[in-house]
Image (cartoon, rainbow, N blue to C red; front, side, top):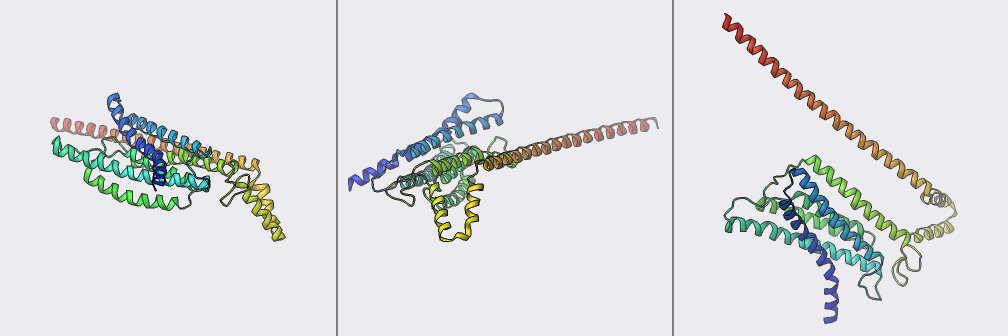
Length: 321
């Protein structure tokens, strides 16, 4: 009855507050950027990205700390893993609702106000940076919830499909292209960098710590009675080895390859070295491209100079004749 509804309302308070802040603060940052009046539009864009990224990462960090410390509203019959998964599901759905509300009031209603009340033909600009960070935030929630709510990626996929067509329609009808300079390749680099390092790396650390160090629920769930989730894999391998002695090689691989910390550190070092060399190669290629462009521009100026000289010599000969 009323007690169940009250408990459901309490569960929706935190996702509502977080989604409201994630929707409101970028607009406040935009007003702050107009007041600051930075000279470079590129610097203004980077400042906006950093502010919004820090906000979202701090919020997600606090949520992860709350979930790992098991400070979730959960009944005694439920596993805390189930409650965390339900929490993440509510965050994804609430983020979708607030994204729709932001498009409704921030784009449609604002366009109508500009056209009908203020009699301006100028439409509101489509904020690429803010929309990119919204995608990264939603994807990070999905990565965090893979372990606790396995169907969350399907929900996120459906959400992204709906948002793509809704945002496309809103962009064509209610917005104009941004006045800030954006290049597609530059935007792709920023998106991949922010998606990989703060988001994917943070979600990987959270899930790894949960699997290797956090004790599962003792009375329910598939990992009950174990010290960590990782112990279930070792138990399964031991049972598999007892039932079939011919797969001792699998146990050897697990002990000497998967659990070997030196090998993991070595592979991590190789991966970092390869990434570093790839970055250096890309920078070298960009430097070569820049030099070639300068060379082409200089050759063009030399050709124009020679043409002007020939033209002046030709005119002097005509005058003498």
